[in-house]
Image (cartoon, rainbow, N blue to C red):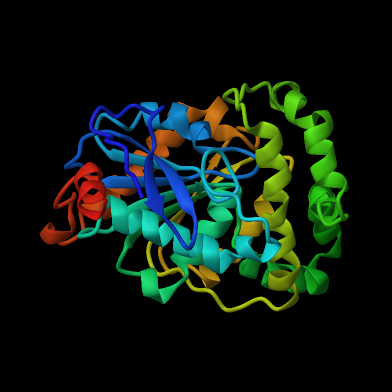
Length: 318
């Protein structure tokens, strides 16, 4: 398949990477020989939601953003099962292999980008490929499953409070209606809804209606299955969790007990709402920079930077 030259770091010109049966639109910024950061966006966003954060980091890091399957310019499989976490993790692994075949990368995820990155970060097969993981407003679904069981025994009031925040998760399982709402007008109004809700402006997204409608499959393919039978998932690398205190969707309670699953855990709390990567981009970037630096310095010399740029890797595989 064709690959576009990203040497000019033009965010409007994607490099196409073959994922797990899909084509992923990747966007590159930053020096070719710098440590690689891979940003994974959430729902119902696309890669552009990271632009403000990347603007603070691209001077020193090779920043890779990509549209996840079903979003932006990337392939959008029709089957709900195609959005399972194992496929999403395989997509992320393909992006990592393309972006930095000879060195581990630092993964930064938000919302569903964080949820799917947790699945990769707790996969022993990817332990050597991810140097660190920063999670923002997106817990591991398996950890949530265990947390729900503990809350039922210890703090049912707290449990019901979080379930109230997550009302939309249940609504997304209604057949047909959520997708219809996105295409009937929610997609056109989403930008203004978020602005009123959080006093923060998202990037204008011409594919917003489709991104919202298709991304519902993320919930349907994964949430019930993982909460019903949560696995024991231990992080394979240092993890930083950034907790926006005013997040209306993801409560801070999910951080409690995370030490059970993460040996090297850093928690940062910030005064922000869900889309902190927009409203507090500089703060998010500063936390990411500090965490990456603290973990990149400990890597072996052979594991720093890239042996060649993503553009060269794309040309080699074209």
